[in-house]
Length: 306
Image (tube, rainbow, N blue to C red; front, top):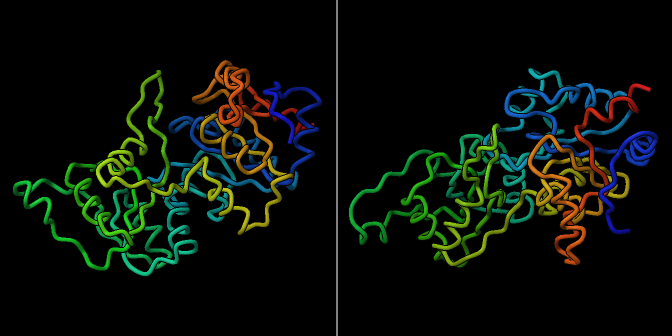
């Protein structure tokens, strides 16, 4: 595969690239919507791609929504989407535990109700969702009651994250046979107006530091995210395009899996950052260079409407 060039995708090149693929993977926030507003033109792009016979999938590191919640949001914003086209880290974590780990037992879950629902949908029970307040002294914390059926610790985004959750996860993870899985390593969640809040990566790193163990992550840029889609729908990597707004997750995923990659500038990353990676001479950083970029995925509309 030739080195990515970070070429502006416009004019006749748009049709040429779209003709070269059968499947398109889209990240969600910063790509097809921002917050609760669709990116202008994005619903038409998604719906026209499908009308033109392309298979469209949605891959997101957000673990706070089930696939049904995503489809409900997409429908409200005007996107034509089905539940089986959505691959979030809540669902992919459940699939990883069931199919790759063949887990026999419960999960201690630092995460959301959405993660609990996706785990339960594949027959995996959990404990841990909700607040866990500090009780007692340090000796009590070190001897906190543990569920003997727990065989894995899973860390996703958890608004109730706390010292006691880190402690409880650490106590489970002192057992070498206990699996350790994280949804993703995004350290910051960007918001409108240049603001940001801590992401799942911060929570996961806290647990890893306490447990002195490294988690296996399932979200982008890990190849498992693409494998989830490919194994279910028979997607050919050579004829697949990954569209995203983050170089370190979306574009890296595409590079890791041999996909064509397209950066959209409606989200986090910039062309200047991509060009800095390109000129760095570092192989790892060059995997974050997209093949193409657009100002917005609405730039694909003329080729689809023609």
